[in-house]
Image 1 (cartoon, rainbow, N blue to C red):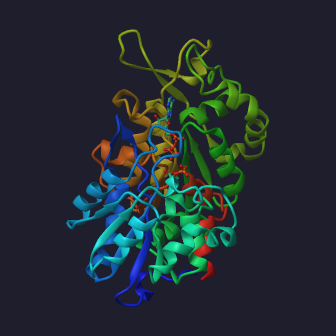
Image 2 (image 1 turned 180 degrees about the vertical axis):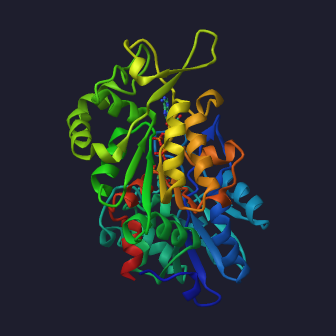
Image 3 (image 1 turned 30 degrees about the vertical axis):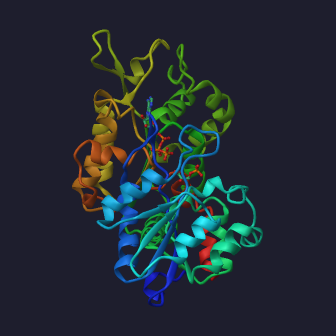
Length: 401
Ligand SMILES: Nc1ncnc2c1ncn2[C@@H]1O[C@H](COP(=O)(O)OP(=O)(O)OP(=O)(O)O)[C@@H](O)[C@H]1O
Ligand SMILES: O=C(O)[C@H](O)COP(=O)(O)O
């Protein structure tokens, strides 16, 4: 297992990797739960009198959201109620001068790690540890903390290089996310284990079912992925109408796997019995799946009868895991499925983990309280990997210490 902040010596110069990757709209970085969560780690380190140097990434080179971290520093400062300095440099002279000038309790954010060429190529930790980026920064700090669980599936320099050259520790977010998200693989539950799977990516759902078939009693399906399963079960749904590209490619690529999953695990898989669509007056319309005879409309949510079927299953469960939304919940008319299952989880005292960057957003959007859930993950890709038992490079590197 890894060391945590409880094991850190006092008065250290600590290099901390966060995941502040955020939505960017018209060049403006949007505040989100990642800031709030990481604030706990940063505040704890600063209040303990460490000199805190933060690293994070934003976007991918070439993308519209590949921007500087200058705005992130201000947003983070508002979450920790103390100043966060910013230097527009990753590991050059300016960065080093700013690090060396830190006093006890100061917090400094370095520029977007992905602006450094050595950060991105996925390579072994040994290769990353030997980059100029890692070697230079390591000389100016005493310890490394990885709090970026949600980026830990990447074998990037800032995530896997430092644990080989510095004493390394897990931050508070890393610790909580790791424990909760691995629990389906590591914990034994006395009663029924249920998994709600939806969203837009069929492969995520397939991977989860293939890997967790023995751990999960019931899979409750919805979203685009659920429609592909309905189509495989012989229903006239899951076709791309004009202007859509959700289904056809995914159907071609995954049809056989979905059909064999339905064949082999049919008893564990619950599909929607009704679906919702936008009717002629722009209201929500619903139709029983059995009555769908033509591929003439897009379905944007599971229907109310489906929620009524899923609800008691959730309430009878000992543990519920959620990956992916059951509908286009960003539009209130099509939030019934997603909020229906989330409310059922919130109202029971089952062990629960809700993940997927998009899906967990529905909790705040519809006035639910995160405290009513066991754990709400801020991870996307890392969450799905954890669920399927795949190792995360960043976590493995920390464990090596
Ligand atoms: N029937 C549907 N039609 C259109 N969009 C849908 C439908 N069902 C679900 N969605 C969309 O799926 C999105 C969530 O899917 P996604 O696969 O990205 O899952 P996630 O696990 O929440 O997020 P991520 O993988 O991005 O972290 C939501 O934003 C929702 O609008
Ligand atoms: O936002 C995320 O899921 C993580 O920060 C990883 O980002 P990436 O997919 O660009 O590596």
